[in-house]
Length: 111
Image (cartoon, rainbow, N blue to C red; front, side, top):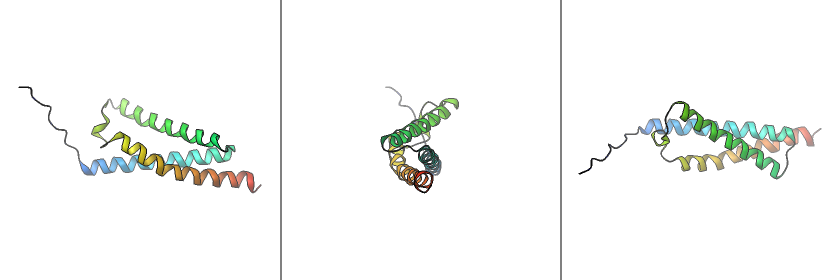
């Protein structure tokens, strides 16, 4: 008989806190990327690529933080990695679009 590994006990409060922190990071990155793309005058697909670069950088920073703390398994901190990426990705996209258009209009339209 093979012994199965003990089930990992996860704290619901800790998981919710981690989700809130990641959501805050996504919104902050989206806000900064929107302001930067608007001020730089990026339009169309250039702005979308700017957003995707910011998203890739934020995912890299989160992965780097987990690697520095020598924790290879993110399931200790999040229920599902794909769920928090996709959920926060689309929510933060609206923040990006808002600040992108706002800053672009302030800098270039209302000169």
